[in-house]
Length: 173
Ligand SMILES: [Zn+2]
Image 1: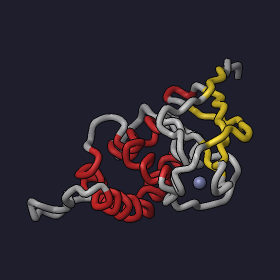
Image 2 (image 1 turned 120 degrees about the vertical axis):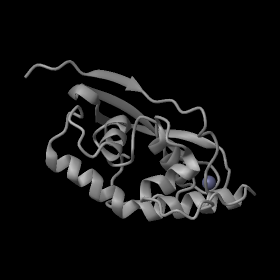
Image 3 (image 1 turned 45 degrees about the vertical axis):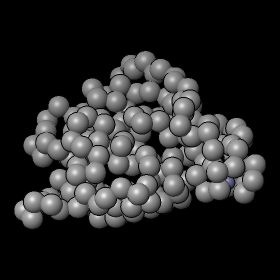
């Protein structure tokens, strides 16, 4: 199979200070990460590894089309989580199953972090005002909305605060 692969350089506008100590970040190195987009197109993303000049910790720039440690782009994963019988996502059944299981395991952590971030920013908790039972997905939507990009909006603040649960260690997100 012949596929053309495009290379994209990731430059984040938000991540310019250390999420741990607010120190200045310097570019330390970069790594390549393959991302599979909807329709099966492969992209190579060049992601910079940043180092804090104060606390010396490393941080990766995370573009909003990626979820840490996932090869498929955020849009495909988002769509598979929302539409349980989705057929247009270019991934096999076992991949779709893994995403859904991953989300089920992560959902409470994501929601807990979003709740903590909301309180930290001095906002009132958005938790359950209606009293109706809600799915894990709907409870996350209460914080980030259900418009396209919700998964990035949920994941990025957590990653930026270094609260993301790493299921395995790797140098590249
Ligand atoms: Zn720092």
